[in-house]
Image (tube, rainbow, N blue to C red):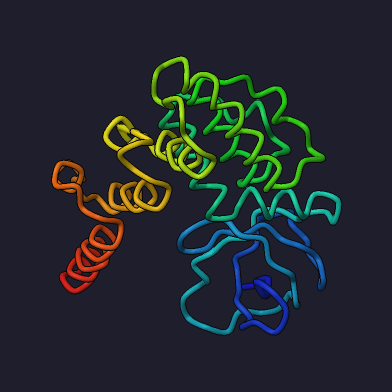
Length: 226
């Protein structure tokens, strides 16, 4: 049996894949293959005889041209596949944005699920930090209109409330700027992120330090039981 050998990156272990009929890769070609968990792009090292009783479990699918290499690698990455699932779960059509990376798709998804205009976010010249900052700024007006972002919030409080909205939290639990300062509101959101019910912390007027200590102990207990 003739198989194709290749590596996932430079100086990595060599693996083998079955060849589909009509596929003729050569050394240094990029190849789309199946692995145990997902699709992957590898670099061909050689095409040779297979000398083991059982054939390789993976299969070579097609040659990837240098021009499409980056796009195919991105599309087969775990981050991209995870984003595909999140778009499906949200009922959104990811096919409209074939040239977007997983990072950009995440920002578009968060914008679309927040009901804001995504047109400004389609500017491919924006780097990630600019994209995140722009999206969050676009979320502020509707958040204020819905009463989720009260008057009097400073920049840090605003960011924590917007982050909570991104994560689908009930931000009304901690969005009172007079009751929760910048550091306290940050710790309360992190508690919600960890799955902690923050109602008792708010009613007991726990300090930022107390909330922080409780969260750390809670997360340590969770890790110990895993």
